[in-house]
Image (cartoon, rainbow, N blue to C red; front, top):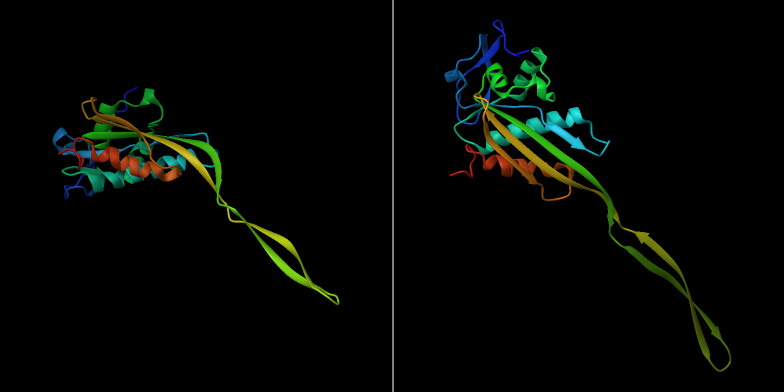
Length: 221
């Protein structure tokens, strides 16, 4: 079943300055192509990990917000729809972006009132923990003197005291994939990149790298 219908209500967004967040102005019927021009909506990200310590739903929304923030900082001549507006419209129309059969990029762009849709995936692999640091051993000495008639003998005895200054860190391998579609349903941009660093949030700088190299990114001159 199509996600569009004759009585479907979508948002019309107010015009704003370059890179600012689009906020809803009023509701009306399906947005015309001219109204969608240069507007971008970021979908909730796919979060894949073998680490049970991270809740996929929360990480998905966090990465969606990170992506929208990066788009505002690293692009020009486009308007970024606020993720809360995007998620509200998805929920209102009962659309699950994780179900490929329910998502048509062209129809979804029209529904959200944008020209471009951003889909992202972050794959995080917990590679285990490592410990860095060193053990330090010191000695607490005491001297004992024995005297006899003709000589002086000194004997030393000591107790070893060991302290551990090591730090344990969990290491992650992270890969980010970014896909951008137009409101015509065509692929506009598709790139993947493995993150530098071994922290869970290494994906943030990788997102910046990929977004800067989109057709409207700051590195695409």
